[in-house]
Image (tube, rainbow, N blue to C red; front, side, top):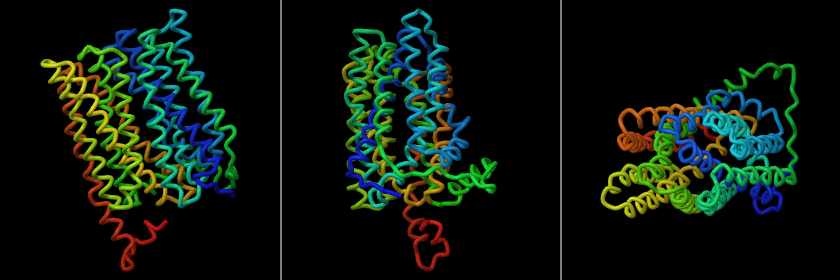
Length: 425
């Protein structure tokens, strides 16, 4: 099978398609949130339900999606997913123009986009080792993560500006266009991947295939720690992120442009974190890099409740706190993410990549709808600021499973340790 260099034109076509997909995702996330809060006057609970609708798919189909993707052609899977997402988001401006847009429509669109995104994301993360040389996997992931952030630098701010001149639902047309452009880029990307040929032994083994992916995550000591850390991190990060649109637009009194600016500032930090990850990995241990990234994220998460507190004295200062905080927490998150993705890809056999990624996402992303619902309920029951502080405290414990990664890897690669094959594979 032909494996391409990370510098090949073929990889760059895939790279552009994924960047456009990420661009569309950011536009769509902002567009749906602003449409719900500003136009449909959604409260905290409804915003929580909207967040849950976009991520509940990982609980519903996350595990079988990995087994299915391992049997599918990954590029074709991504192409179909891109087209379905394009059509789904077009429903928002269409129904808005005809006067039929309701909060239930946003729930449905978020659910459909979330379902196909499960397949797209699992296929995408499993496709990188198929497309590039093994030595280029870390560099490819760094470029993909960095430019995914670069693509969002102007996106949210531009969406915010557009929403000043036109209604938020119309901005979803831009989202649809990016998904269509992603489809076209993937259509001209070349690979030699062959569909797995079913045998009498593999037919009807969906449950067994799912179990094999789960066992790998459970039994591989490093991957198990990564899954635990990401699960805790995403849960509390989702609690905070769910309430940020309400905080910015309703509590602090900013408009949609400011919300876009906050997200753009986070993207700048994300670029920095993604670019620093390979260099940091050359100088420091993998555990140290990931731990620093998670602690940085936890530290800057304080910015959300802090902004609400200082707003009583200065709204400008509150805005500055939000911008700096989003920059710092996203930089730390991307420093961690680039490092952990490359690490688990290198530890997993290629025939298990889809199921491993799906199992990870089931654990990690499966917590997000529960976190969104909890954030919405707590925001209404005890107030938004106390709920944000709960998210801050919870994010600190994220780093605990990562603190022993270096020790585990050292023990597993020791010549006298019986666990050598477990990490080497």
